[in-house]
Length: 308
Image 1 (tube, rainbow, N blue to C red):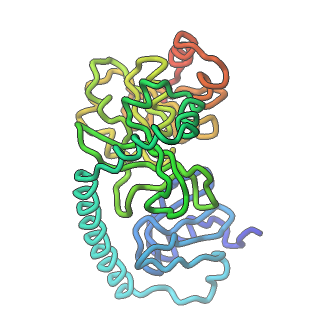
Image 2 (cartoon, rainbow, N blue to C red; image 1 turned 90 degrees about the vertical axis):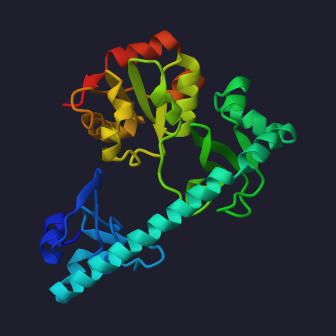
């Protein structure tokens, strides 16, 4: 099915007076015109829309052409939505700070790491994913019999630390369902960079990859300063202005083969210092499945292109 409204993005922007931002190949997002949820209203080029459900958000979905005849929101309604959105943002900020404070005091990752002594199958999992015993130890990788945010689902755990503080524990579900493979340790935690300590490495170049496992395997096999985003959409543009990135002369962005456009977008954030690396396979698969070498990997970086 395809909507009959013409350009769906232009339709939404003119109809509701909101601005949409491209977040995918055929996907745009912006504030919900129905509940005011910031960046939760998604529109696809086929003309369908969806407000991602969450507490205080409407979860409305449908086709834009079915909105014909619906009343256009009044300025007063739009003002109410903006106020509600600001209040929601403040509440989310307070929840995030509270969650981070709790994570800084958390030691669950140590218990999960210790679980490897009793679950040899979990050790085998990490080894099969390409981690050496030293990497398993250094990153304190582990196993959790029941994920706190997905009860009943066992998970393989990846602590997210920075400067000695714990910020999250990423749970990779052993048998994921339709809700996705990864879960946070608790609700309300912010999206962060993985292995951010590499931003302080004595290196001229930095590599940005998609996913924690890739960062660990690539760093292990090459010795390169490597950080990871939690998915290809997770790099915030404001991060590029962080002074920690300024010390690197070249920043290579290597995402999965189907995310080259997003990699180019992120590389462009660095104003001429960003380079897009393309490979016909995932970065960790290069070493784990294809017996790749450090020299071979560096050749891909040598052929990286400007984001322009």
